[in-house]
Image (cartoon, rainbow, N blue to C red; front, side):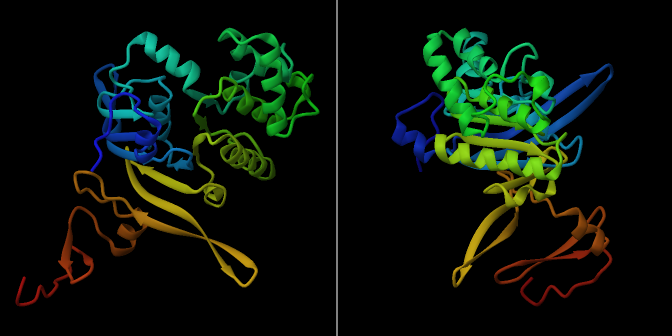
Length: 310
């Protein structure tokens, strides 16, 4: 098995490795005399070029994970690597360069993404000019990005002349201005109606295909499964389930369906979906029985025959 490198290796090496790798990740916040554990030994792998989403209830740890991947927060323990870069050992100067060139970020609140006194094109040009782009090159790429998100006719419009969905499209273009290989978005459709939200995710899919950018979206929208390749659910600071988008064909008609899997982490921990536990009335303990090709789970009160070989 190929070892995971701490620093970026050759393109062939990186192609075989997870682009994002989190192992036994913890994040603990201290509030006066209390400690709040946001991440509890989380494991996650994301392949290069993937379009995926992270979902979970409020307080589950999904935004904390996104902030760590963006270089905006530091884990308390564990390992977090992006593109072979260990986020726990990077110097402050390296982290600045990482945030500037390796990752783009889209906030839920449009006011955090755009400057109100600049046009759409000027907003997209600004990160490139600050990073040393020639004005002509910055303008050309800005036009390309705004056209890619469907705003080629709104280049000279200021944010107050754009709808909420259009402002988020500008924000996506800004996040991609310096051509980062990773795009992170925190609830980018949280303040939008369902139709506009669907258009935003359509833009993500087009950018993922056209620019080969890895995209990770945090969202509470249950309909997201139809828009992305994989949905990872977080519960109590750990990955609980993964759902994969599949397409099958019956004649000429395509049908989209989803396969959901419970996730077993590196320590062998398995989260059983809460609705299953509630339905079986499983509380603190459960009985297990190993069959030839599966494991059966029973409530504690139910007696089961373990068989002569158990």
